[in-house]
Image 1 (cartoon, rainbow, N blue to C red):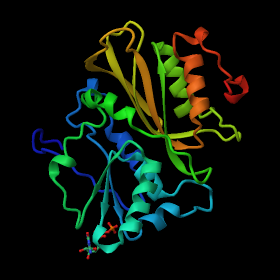
Image 2 (image 1 turned 30 degrees about the horizontal axis):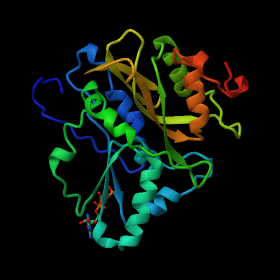
Image 3 (image 1 turned 90 degrees about the horizontal axis):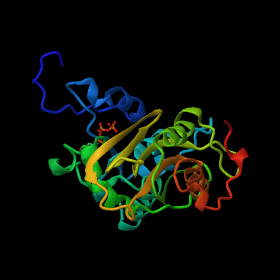
Image 4 (image 1 turned 180 degrees about the horizontal axis):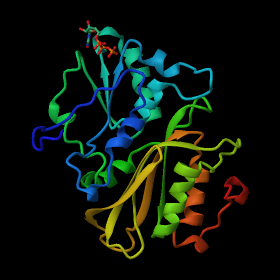
Length: 272
Ligand SMILES: Nc1nc2c(ncn2[C@@H]2O[C@H](COP(=O)(O)OP(=O)(O)OP(=O)(O)O)[C@@H](O)[C@H]2O)c(=O)[nH]1
């Protein structure tokens, strides 16, 4: 690593039980620090035969199991060994993975054979990904979890401009304070967060990224065409997430147009 220019790309394979979020946090450093390396993306390989079993595993301490967290954090999910399972089981696995992570790209492989252009140079954590993100975010479904404690993807949109300092508070309450509660009084746990937002007085679209307790706002090269288009679209992956509460909270605390909205958000849903 000390010999600059020696490496074209570093592929880091973690153990099967690792939490890739913790590893990713080490390498996801501020571009302005001028590091020689940057975090390109997270790839999770799922074994077709045992994937469903691993994803359904209940941990005694009530924590999310490792396999689910690995899927939740991934930018690319490789479903491997597809030759070993029937189409019906593969469908179930695909649906389960999609309900956990609505944003990651799913690729199906045998012997993990994959076109390298699909897994390298992803730029999943930088503003270059913002160029294609707007379109992508429109098609992310919110799936109701079959189990209350399942990891799920939720997405919402709120038109208008966001006040940057309030957006920071919103994200920090979710990622740092962890004090935003769902209807059942569970604190929401966000594992991954991605979005495109419109920050007041900024002509460019801003990409929001979050992993674990780290997050970043970065301007993309894409400008808002006109004021009618300005909107905020967020995708959150985690547990105990409630789309309606999140959206109402976002509108009430972050957007400029809060007075035009009638919100039913109760203050006691957030401890401050
Ligand atoms: N039928 C089939 N076998 C595969 C496929 N991919 C890998 N294998 C075989 O499965 C066996 C175990 O391989 P992996 O699951 O990749 O092993 P590994 O990466 O060491 O497993 P981890 O411990 O999870 O890291 C080897 O004999 C592989 O040849 C596949 O797509 N189809």
